[in-house]
Each structure stands twice: as structure tokens, then as C-alpha cells.
Image 1 (cartoon, rainbow, N blue to C red):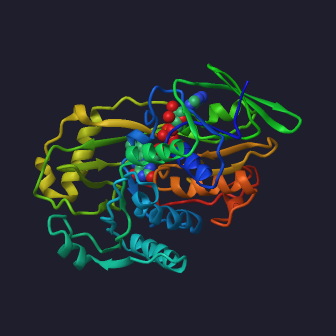
Image 2: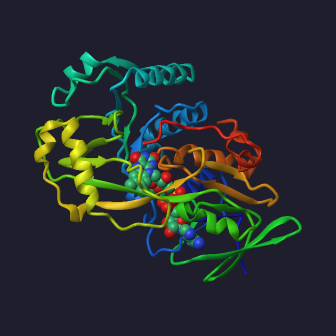
Image 3: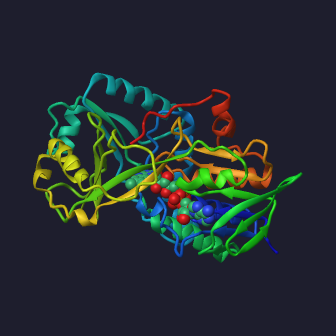
Length: 385
Ligand SMILES: Cc1cc2nc3c(=O)[nH]c(=O)nc-3n(C[C@H](O)[C@H](O)[C@H](O)COP(=O)(O)OP(=O)(O)OC[C@H]3O[C@@H](n4cnc5c(N)ncnc54)[C@H](O)[C@@H]3O)c2cc1C
């Protein structure tokens, strides 16, 4: 039987980052199992690639305070690209309660050590982006080190570095079971045979609850469809723009290639493994786009280029990180609730620390343990896009 020090189940950006961090910390026998013929066929390849530190909870801010500088120095560290573009995130408030919310978040972010975030007045937003309809914008917040990465490159680069340094990636290999003995995890069963290991990490994204069941663990991670609509080339709006968020309805957009990528989370969406793109969504999103950016009324869109993917949602919109209660050696890195790309670097560091040393100083990881749901210790993130 093949053996590995650590088996990572799932080769998306989270599994790749854990493989990178374990390998960088000196762990050599890391095996990543990916059921598809190529990486990126899960949520990572569908992501909008936004990275931000403008969160409302200290633990999410801390995760970003590690992850964004990691992306900023990615090429230097790895010698591979991730295409980090620090164009910022601009939240546009249209009500006084939005402003109060942004101010409270801003104060928390600054107290946690975030630099480059500032509150902006409505007047300044209108000056910065005269093509936005700004009559109802009362202010906002902007952080210049927020921005975008190319999730697919970041994922491939993390894995390529790990493989260069001894990790193994096996594709077309579906994990079908987990074997336990009195010490905890003993082996991972796959369609290509079993792998003996004392440590397995669940990085199966939206499919994580199914993998957790193999170990008898109930994981509250639900798939939720999200759809994105790219535009055709358009030069009227600046391509240096940040991610702009209209807080009146959640519509947001960012430059992408020679056009723009439009997003809006339909509150009527229901959980499930739905990955088909709903053509009716195009009209819903274009209506909101034209309302906030009048020149988008003529935005050329080819619906055939639009796509859908899955968020992996938890009840409190925070990930579940750490060893599963009652199953020694079974680690969880799941439920990123729309933030898995931006928090992949911190997750890799945290999981690598926990696997190799049993503790981490990056965050108070007890806050994100699976036990929090049974113990009534949920910590709600409200800045979810
Ligand atoms: C439309 C959209 C926009 C998004 N925008 C952003 C954004 O702007 N910023 C951000 O940070 N996040 C964003 N996200 C969320 C982000 O994409 C995810 O949180 C992140 O990709 C999760 O990474 P992952 O590695 O956990 O999961 P995945 O990328 O889904 O990888 C999981 C892997 O596990 C494999 N797998 C599953 N079961 C098994 C098994 N039994 N055996 C072997 N392999 C298995 C799958 O094939 C898959 O490759 C977005 C998501 C979507 C859908």
C-alpha cells in the first residue's frame, strides 16, 4: 500500500496552498488527490478572484492580513505568477446605516493593523468615478491593497512549487472512503487503491460534506450557486477601477481583460449542486448594472460566455478549520463562503502549522473549529458579497 505523511483530498486553491505551506515547512511526503483530470474544475476555476481585507470580523481580517501580503510577494516567493492587481475595493454606501457599518468595520480593520483603508465621502467617490450614478452615494470605504488575483494561476503556481519541492499530485483519483483505527485516521481509500496515512485533510470545496461523511463527521457546508457575467470590450469606464460594490443591492463589478466582470448574489438562489447558468440572470444583473453605471446600459454581453459556480456556505459565513472533533488526524479546511481564494494563503499556513506542530499563532483557530456550531459559538460575517 502506498503511504504518505499527509493526504490532501482536493486539488483546488485550498488544497494547493496547504500542499505549498506543508512542503515549504519541510514536510516531504505530501500527496494531493484530485478526482478530475485537471485542477480548477471546482469553485477555484469559477471564482471572481477578488481579494480584500475589508471584513467585519477580526478573524477574517487577520486571515486577509496574512493572505494579501502573501499574494503581493507571490512571484518573489514562488517564482510563479498569481497576477495580483492591487486596484482596491470600493464599498459605496447609499444609506446612513451602511456608513455606520463601514465606519465600525474600518475602525476594527485599522485596530487590527490594516493600513491603506480609508473612509471616503460621497463627493470624493463622485469625483473619482464620475460615470457612476452618485446622487444617492453618501460615502464609502476604500482599501488600495485589496484587489484581484488570477485564481487559476495562483492555484497552479502553489501546486507547481509544492511538486517542485517533493509533493505529489495524483489526478483522476476519487477519494471514496476513510479508514480509522483506535488512533484515528489510518488510510484514505480511492478509486486507485488505498493510501496509508495518519493525516488526511478535507479540501473538497463544495463537496466537503460528502467527504466528511466518510469519517462519520457531520459538516455544515452547503453548495450555493453564484453566477458571473463578463462583458465584451468596453472603454468608457476606466480599467484601473477597483472592485466597486453598490451597497443598495449588492451589485458589484470589476475590470476584466478589456471589459468588466459583473456579479450580483440573487437572494432567491437556493442551496444545491446547480452549476448551470440561468439565462434569466443576464437581464436581472444588467438592470442593476445600468442603474449604477448609466453607460453600462449599452454594455455588450455575450451570455454564452457567462458562467455559474458554487460557493461553499457555512451557517456563519466563516470557514471551518482544524482537526475534526473525535477523529484524530482528520483535518478540515472547508466552508469559505465566497472567500476561499482570498483566504487560501492563510488557510495553508494555519493547516500546515496545525498538522506539523498542533498549534498556530496566525489566528485563534478555536474560533473556527467545527465544535462552534454545537457549542453555539458562531461568529457571523456580514460583509459577504
Ligand atoms: C462565481 C464565484 C465567484 C467567486 N468569487 C470569489 C472571489 O472573488 N474571491 C474569493 O476569495 N473567492 C471567491 N469565490 C469562492 C472561491 O472560488 C472558493 O471559496 C474557493 O475556490 C474554494 O477553493 P477549494 O480549493 O476549497 O475548492 P475547489 O476549488 O472547489 O476545489 C475542491 C476540489 O476537490 C475535488 N474533490 C471533491 N471531492 C473529491 C473527492 N471525493 N476525491 C478527490 N477530489 C475531490 C474537486 O474536484 C475540486 O477540484 C467565488 C466562487 C464562485 C463560484
